[in-house]
Length: 384
Image 1 (cartoon, one colour):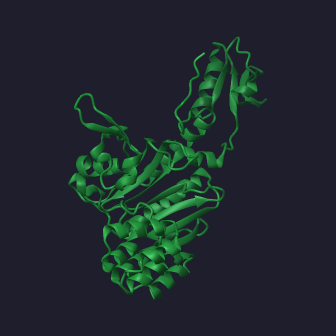
Image 2: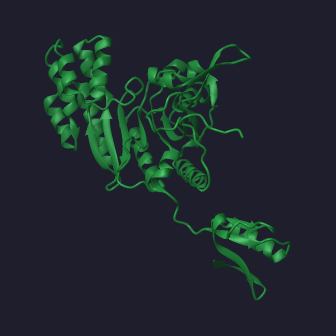
Image 3: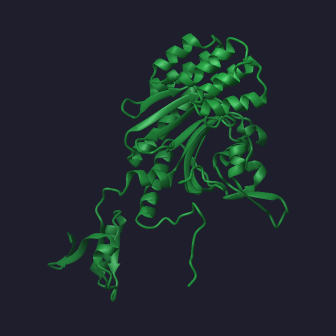
């Protein structure tokens, strides 16, 4: 007998988990639409040039590639939807002023992000184009926190950073691309000895500032320390001001805030504030986003942009089963009153399963906790 195996890090999503994912998708997109975000549905497959625009080498390595038999050009299966939304805004939508987009679709990774990570994700997100200031970053960050609250994710921990701090120091220090890449890697790993060694030839005060970055991590006092200890440059002051504004706008109790001035998530992609949400017992970020003003340039329309995304399947597994009554089991038949009762229940949002003749599966296997029964000529729902 053939053993039907899926590729490594590829999984089926079975009921009832699939139902939880679909229910959550509908609720989150409804929330996004209520906030003015219009849903777009980019294709799963397109020419690879547009998929990797402005995203750096990491996304390129994660992109499955194949040759289009119609054109002979190289195509890719998307590994991230955000560049596609930037293409839509720059090339197709062409609307003036602020534009808001929401999306939900599968993305595929040629390489898993971690040993236990899946290679097919259900990416849900929101992107805001056409507004250059921190107010739009705040809107997107708060929308992300609202999405996690709707999903029921507990104890959210929000990390905030700003890539302009590192970029400003690198530019003022005049370091070459090779040293910049090495410092980027060392800072991401919080490797203090390596940062120390790599900055030996960097002139003061940039050397001391780069060495201080990995230590600027913690609560809001980090921003005060950075203002005192980092060079008094307008770019750095502006970045710290944006982080303070985002902290001020975060609703009380929505998340525990931490600041990390060495957080360079998406450094080759983002251009300003970056943020990532975590929860207890989960080592990696469950949602992340930030500003990426330059991605649309390759499509002929550089626009200010900010957004966030999450893996809907991953978030669904964090919160478990929904706290709702089980389905209703109803007898089979052509009685007009019975059929009307079934349709009324379904119209109200209930799941009604008809107990087909000859089905020997126990009711528990149908995930039903109630039954539609007839009493005194009327159909009503009763607990099983």
